[in-house]
Length: 241
Image 1 (cartoon, rainbow, N blue to C red):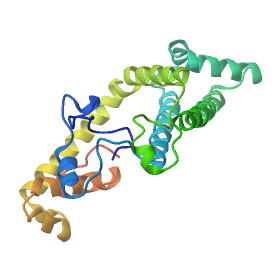
Image 2 (spheres, rainbow, N blue to C red; image 1 turned 180 degrees about the vertical axis):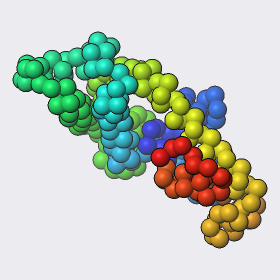
Image 3 (tube, rainbow, N blue to C red; image 1 turned 90 degrees about the vertical axis):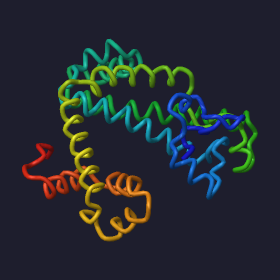
Image 4 (cartoon, helix red, strand yellow; image 1 turned 180 degrees about the horizontal axis):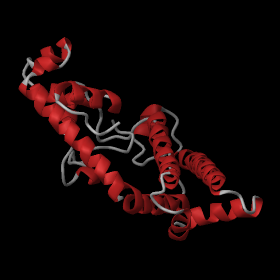
């Protein structure tokens, strides 16, 4: 729950990233039943999971975007100095390497550099904080698993580039819009008729918080299952296969 940092600040107000929209109501409800210490940091393991997830997204979204032809490698190289340095290394080691292999080598190097940097920086932070227990980690007042300033800057550059050139690419948005329509139609269908869900989920929907039960059921679907459910409940294929 807190792998990206505390959800509340020292005063009990929403942390910076939740300042506008607030902490999700479902989280606050659960916290009343079972305290999650929302104002404290997560364990080192959870922090490591968060940064691993982030590294995987950066590297594989670069790989996917290049292989799908959403942007050329020259444009990525020009926009992100960190990537330009890695491609320079590849060019020096393997002159005239065909582009698919360049993409493969680039992806490997992004992952490697980010991981190596995280190991080194995290070791320095842990040593400086002198934490000797999980309780000390939670009360440290800072994230202990992280990147150096230079790699944080590279991460921001990569994300800014991908946001503009991949996540908001017209072809990607078309698919996202179709997926959004499927989720909305499924939600409306199950809200109208909970018996369209499996019996255990229909029972949960009948216990008061129907919207919560329907949302949780849809959230647990794989893409393929959601598409199949849409095709089962509505006439015509979803056009997402």
